[in-house]
Image 1 (cartoon, helix red, strand yellow):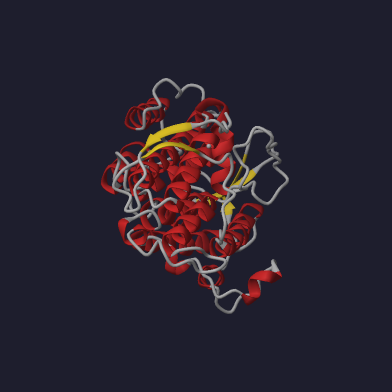
Image 2: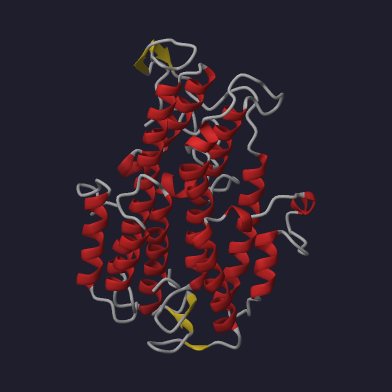
Length: 366
């Protein structure tokens, strides 16, 4: 089965701490900024990679209109090699996605890309056991599924934001390797090494610096409306995740500025915990959607594919209660064939995810 495989921040927010150059004690009282408005913030590399990913995802989804997808072209896009980007600013970029994917996930993603290539060539009408295009009952939407009902374009999109941005932010840039570095020498435009690494993690979340301010009005026509910011905001009314994730990012950067490593580490824990609730919450959200559209193969399987992509991505956060083995078991037990899945299978998966990620009281509202 491997192959399937942020309420606003108050200006008066106070946290208890005590001042110490070495960060051994908290500051007694410290006031957090209301936005991620710090000096020397630079996450241009992350911005470029997410721009690249946007084009890759768009290309993969052309398969739903019956277009053939070329695996080598997608690999070239992932590696930023021999490819002319529609966003011409990317054509001078040395950044790439392939080298930043979690290692094991990169292999799985490669399998998904090759499989999408295979089934997108002259596709049949899809059904249980037959890969192909499947239309919804109203005839208004169409998706390309493999023989088990999986939409590879959705696995690639949700898997990529998990194995790239979620992984890099929660497991790499906030790891001890990236955090236990120089925090004295300021590099103009980038800050200290520690500040820069934290900013790079923030870049993978991709939020505007004033995302959690009371004056901020979310606009889904803006460039930030994609990937994790989009999904966090989708769940915000229920989970309040926009402000919680931004608070963790602001708290961590402010602590690093003050060389307060205790508070920095608290912020890392909070960031991981709140972000994983978005990932788990979106899995539940799409499972609920699949139940609502259960009788429609196209709409059900489309949403189940999205749910499995988020479920698969939970493993990339080092704080996740469900590791890769546990996640794969859920997928194998409940999602081996999306055409043959039952509402009991879906409910069991919802309950398991909700229990592990503290979402029991929210599961019916996501």
